[in-house]
Length: 367
Image (cartoon, rainbow, N blue to C red; front, side, top):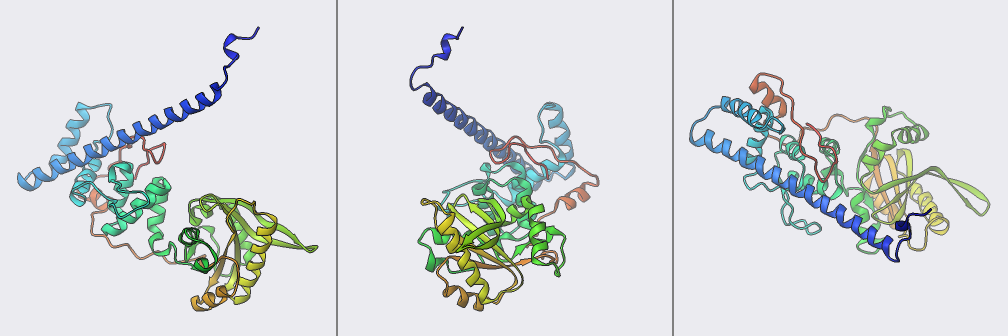
């Protein structure tokens, strides 16, 4: 016998979907609100510590006493370790107004540090001293919903120097704003040192290794890339052709053809990639997809030669270098105490507490 509730009235399914969306939105706003309250609390505690140490001459040992007293008063509440209190002090000292991201980012409007999870803020404080760089990486973390591990990797790999640096003909071959968005997603150089290959590696070796490390490869490509296939087969006039790697970019709404060259860039490389783009647009692209773009990854490139070569093709193409082996990046400008320096000052190994759940990552991460 059927339950009477199974005879659903017209419109019930749509109403249920709407309710689910509203509930999810309310939960998200609650998480954002809780995170904002936590960040404001930590900033206030850090400011109080600063004031009492600077104006009343309290010594460094008071932080250890404060940590013990707060833990005793709130045994079920995490976040009051000595190390975390030192982070709070550093936060208040380096960001007296609690702001990282200023109003200059028109695409997201004014954003403040309380929209970032606590250990994202700690990472920005301990890895970067330049206010402009903090602002830039904070924007990226917010707009791309980076977990903390991704933020650390991107700072280490100096993404700010590589983002949007590839040689392209997008302004001539794509309509705005697609041209600007497409140029922004490409980098130069790409770092493939995670593959474990030497400079003598052949194209197929690199391709195989990139597929084995597809998660890290997608991270290096950037947000929005979805992997479609390798050695993607095309048939033109009865002849077979194979694309090295094919992706779809969810933000640009277009296919991205990636060709690997284990040699210096040559003008004929652009001609071959141009042929592939024509074939993909004719055979693969859906009517509502944007024009397919190409990314040519070479061992090295002469930027002027690349610019000349791209000016003579009719499809949107970017050219960038990749690095299989590279030296460690030069340290970013920093005069702030590192995590290690803080631990050395205290004279013991202190473990960080976990942060409250954040809107960026479902699990709070630890530095």
